[in-house]
Length: 171
Image 1 (cartoon, rainbow, N blue to C red):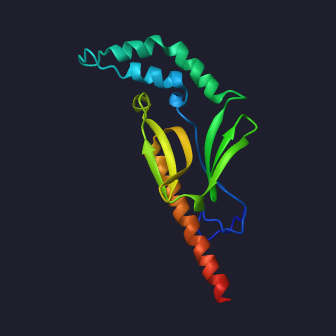
Image 2 (cartoon, one colour; image 1 turned 135 degrees about the horizontal axis):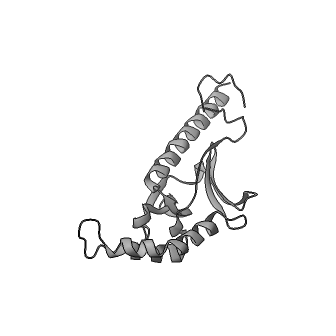
Image 3 (cartoon, rainbow, N blue to C red; image 1 turned 60 degrees about the vertical axis):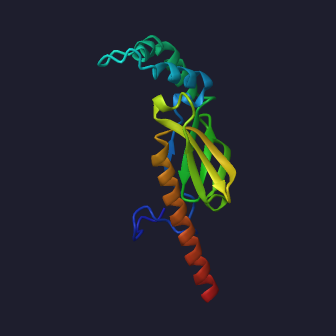
């Protein structure tokens, strides 16, 4: 990477793909995690901090720990990587690409919070092009933040691409 960049983090499209950020899915990526999230969210009897859901969460620590280890294990590890050109889903410690979506293949991202994900502050990001689903990232932690980051990266990519095309046609 060129160290004399005029603007930090901005890389020309002619340069290699640059890693921007990585997000690991929440424990609610697994069906068992979503089921536990529904239990943890039980607010009864709702006296100060005493709630049935908090007691269940404390009792389920060993189960949650196993889900966490499955989420980051050497074979099952999954992560969502935002680069300067696309969004990638990588699996395993060798980071084998499972699927990806380039920035010009979507125009909208919606956040859908399924039952059991709310307790984890997580949700699914669904990518659309012309109201047709093209891609889905499940159980993204703090999905609205990652959604905005993806849209900002897409906007920058498309603006740069358009400027380069205009410059090329003018020459």
